[in-house]
Image (cartoon, rainbow, N blue to C red; front, top):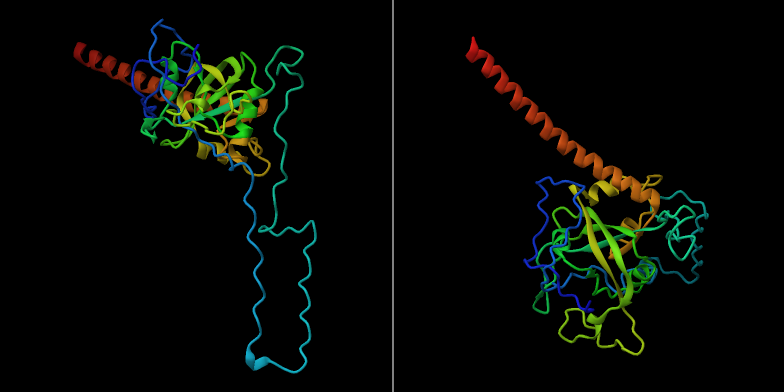
Length: 306
């Protein structure tokens, strides 16, 4: 497969229709047709992982000329707050290291995946250097060959892709959407390889500093697995990310600008539960409506017979 980011689908990018339901068990079906890859939007920024440096402290204001005197006592420094201060303004959440697999295969002794993933793409049209970089889960579903997740120019996101193993599952996340959220599941089918788009001057994410002899950027190949019936939106996820919540340390929340995130197994299972719950509600409403229609027809039939 060529290492470019031209889409394997034949139609233009379409955003997910959030008001419609669809089966959550739909699987990838390849039709053998080959088309052109579309550029995918880059979410992260090379410098967005580290927190910004705090501004320099302000100088103390000088005393008014009216209060000047021959001898001025020096002001006593403000007492330092104790390390265990409960001040909400200064309290900081303890940083929790990202999940790390126990083996290079990212599988436990029973062969189960240990670390899961979350990959972001923008489903709505956006142009970079005249190229539409929108890419949705529906676009991935139409791909007939592994889709290279190229264009990532963030070291931490790149490192996460290099840690992926063939067969790994990840969430497909729609970013800058209405609403943004987890919309389905994808599978890694090709482990990290050199991202050729970095060397292409015509590519929206061309990196002029990239050296083919010492490649800096890599990408994995992915395929469609499943599309959820309903979006697990970011607001819902953040609702469970408070202190002590099941998603408190999820990278999607703690490193919100990172386009390729790690997901702990317990976080993966919790979000899957949310997806089933949201989809279940929708299916239940449809069944209830159908039952009402059937009962209404039966009542009309009985009235007609009378």
